Amino acid sequence: MCILGATGSVGQKLIRLLHDHPWFEIQTLAASDRSAGRTYAEAVHWLEPTPLPPSVSGIKVVSVDSVQECDLVFSALDSNTARRVEPLLVAAGNSVVSNASAQRMDPAVPLVVPEVNPDHLELIRGRNGGCIVTNPNCATVGLVLALKPLVDRFGVEAVDVTTLQAVSGAGYPGVPAMDILSNVIPYIDGEADKLGEEPGKIFGRIRDLTIEPLPMTVSAQVTRVPVVDGHLLSISVKLGRSATAEEALVTFEEFKSPLEGLDLPSAPERPVVMLAGEADPQPRLHSGLAGGMAVSIAQVRACPVLDLRFVALVHNTLRGAAGAAVLNAELMVAKGLVNR
Image (cartoon, rainbow, N blue to C red; front, side, top):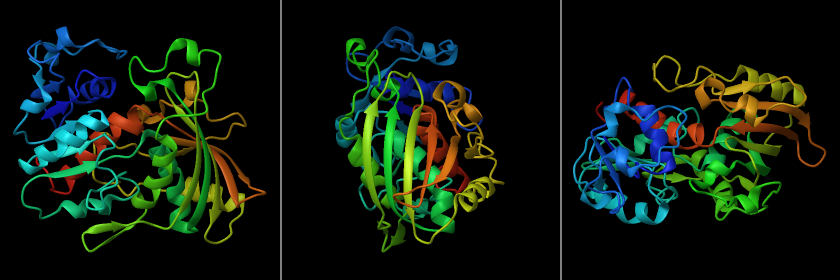
């Protein structure tokens, strides 16, 4: 198994999640040319809260352009590099699980959140050669997991969402301290567009070997806030059929993961967790629920403008990035689409 972009912040998260994974074994680490030829310990500025795993510290880093054949490739590349490298790896017969945004909106490429649209992986079944599976933007993951119970029971026609996004979403070194300390930045390049486009595809239907998006209108305003980890989303929804806040609350609480029984190592028992506190959820207190793989929801209320409003929280670098890619790969294994 290979990790592309291994020295970056998402690449490091992938290494932390995969170095002792029961199904996968890290064999190749790839990064930019300036890191190639050095050991991983020499090339990386390690940012994770756990020590650099000895099993990977001595691996020689290779250039992303030199990777040719690997059973499974995890891509943590920036979008521009991914746009160039990932199609070449697929053409060479590799299975690529990508966190990058470059291929997400290709109608023939699955954009998957396993508890929301696992059936979209059927797009790659039976293909000769390689394939690519992507996970969504870090805020989109939280949004679609929060919407999934409502979509299933009531339908959702329109969404208005405002995000308060952690600085770790910008990677390392990220946002300059003088810009973000004691401040809120009401703009993140490309984020509002991703929140507007990706949910429709994720909730869409497979038709003629492509995804037909669900006609869902999403209005998004995104902000960067001085929080390390955890994206908070303030969400209002227009439902397909009316429901009270009490009915919505029961719907959230009764939601069960479609992954039950698959025994996926990274799958949370409850991907949507309800919190009862009036000041919940909070990034410092709740972003790490279920190892960072659950989305927490609270403050479910009637909305005087649309139908319902509530607050959701997602750990952006785990559930929203590295953990999302690992869970996608585990589901691919469980469906017989890729070997361990």
